[in-house]
Image 1 (spheres, rainbow, N blue to C red):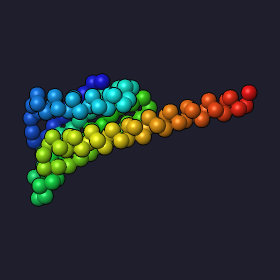
Image 2: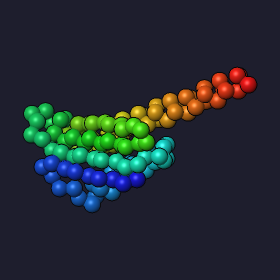
Image 3: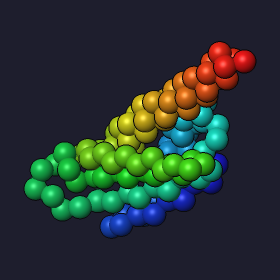
Image 4: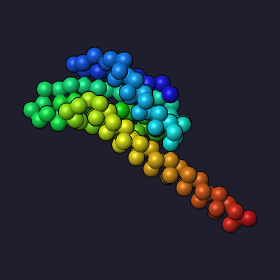
Length: 112
């Protein structure tokens, strides 16, 4: 899986890249058909401290894109939250695919 990281008002350090790549391993364990991932990390001057660090992540799958966004006062926790959100979306997507194919096979066997 290719990972592209863009940022605004900050520099992407090797530690940030390694943290994000390590967390994306969890997504690969659940679903290995991810084509690529795009991350957008930014720091804003929001009045609320919880909204200052933002992580957005888009996963490109075959025929589908999954997107999640998370805000936190710590960038690493924002990245963890966005990975958690995408992991739940991916598990749900995988269940839909498997359930859909299962129903198709069941209908074919009943018609024979």
